[in-house]
Image (cartoon, rainbow, N blue to C red; front, side):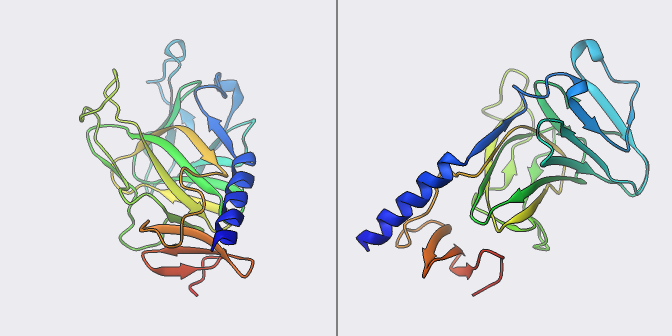
Length: 232
């Protein structure tokens, strides 16, 4: 058992070295630093205030990303034309205007932690729990509370937003995370090392990551998965 915990500590250290943080408050500080496809600038935009609002056409997926971070993609698609589908605040955050937004983290490694710093965009709480168990894709949720409080709730910042972190563990490849109610904004995404790292297999955590016979095992609520997301 002692050898296992030494090995686990080494894995956590390696993950920490490889971690990166995509901090939207520090990069992509001008709209020219972003690539935005299949969207039209809305008249409600205010460049002087650093607010760029976009409309999208029915059935067409719009994708946005910071040029320096092309593996982090904000995608949104709607069944009908949608005004104010999303907002880019360069040097501040990205905001999905509704429930159809998908955050895509490309080229992750099995066991990578993905930690979002996010807040609901308005008076409706943001909900990341999928009743159909389709999302997240290629990942499992570590956070047990997948709700972001509505704007104006207790603990809000000076603008009324309640910022929380949501943590996931990647199964490898492209991870997709979706919200199902009111839209949300994101200001930072950490990829590659988690707040919990490899869990004590004898602990009471809801999600555990550990190695057995050289294979990464992810256990969630007592069910074990391999790095590809297949149940064991």
